[in-house]
Image 1 (tube, rainbow, N blue to C red):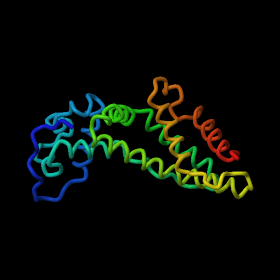
Image 2 (cartoon, rainbow, N blue to C red):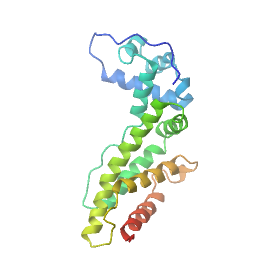
Image 3 (cartoon, rainbow, N blue to C red):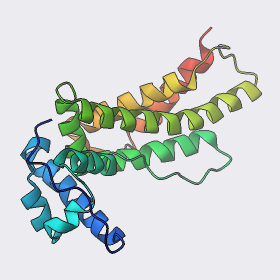
Image 4 (cartoon, rainbow, N blue to C red):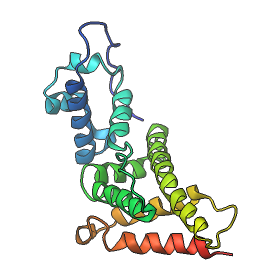
Length: 208
């Protein structure tokens, strides 16, 4: 990706402040959402984070490093939910938490920007891939529990059913829906998600 003049290498000194780290990353994410990845300037990050440039210099040696860290921060996986004895309810709860996050800035805006930039920027593509793989892995564990419950109930299910494939379908359906206009009418996915969960799980369960 395009870079500004490289920053000075990180220097030793007083311990890093986690609060400063978070302020800088949050400011960078907000600026990406406001104006796009390539329009973000380090001066703007410093101003919005109320941090001196030396504070940034001690953490990231180049603008690319800061952009990558900010994308990791914005596109990090959702927090784990508490598991219950109802596997489908747990899957719906996980999907609804992600639906809420994807319905609001900055994640919704940053994800759109990352999808647009990924074909041209390997770093952005790698960040987007980490987002996809992290969410698919979390969903696959929940989907696997649903499929195990179906098997325990003697429902027919193909031996080679891949929970990760179903997880990819769930994530694709949710991300596609969230990035389209009109999500304000269903911000938590309460209309979409029960139907998607039933359609995909029941379809997989009854396939010969």
